[in-house]
Length: 219
Image (cartoon, rainbow, N blue to C red; front, side):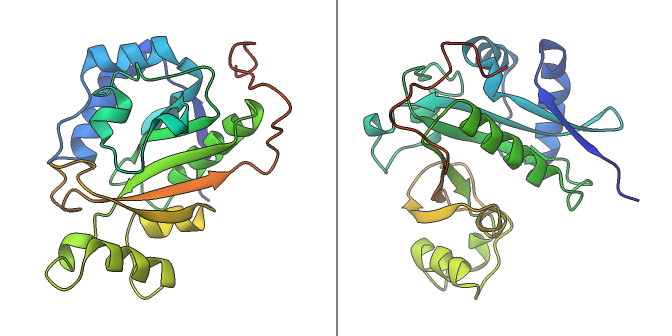
């Protein structure tokens, strides 16, 4: 019998174990700094989530809100996240920007990623936000980089001809592929710095009503 995945909001006590988990997930990418994680919790605590199984931290996701019109398609992770501080968070925005999600390497396949994505969608609906935007890594691209462009690789993943550990999962999670972003995380060697821009549109979004961030309805 599979064990239940529990999703809850991140707390200050989670910061140190989160950093340790991220080191295991992304051994070639610098992990979060403690001060940045604490700032994320200060800026937008509603958007930070932890996944647990039997009390063990097995995954996490982070997000904040932006005015998407302020951002061109070509942007970097450092630019849009203010180097991980989330100081670009704008409570007047209508776009939930998914900055990060990761799962314990030994716990993949247990439904943890799905549970984190589901909680994000619930938050988006609850806040009356228009969409979730994200730039997903393309960790399978390095295997094909000498054969095709990143754009063609991503298209082949969308068509079902190739499988990418991240983009294929995101497509199953009801996200739409919008194109490739160059130099999103330059130090991501597996993805050769590329990322897939994706979007999920909130079917319950009501443009005539305000978002509910300022009213405290996200808790």
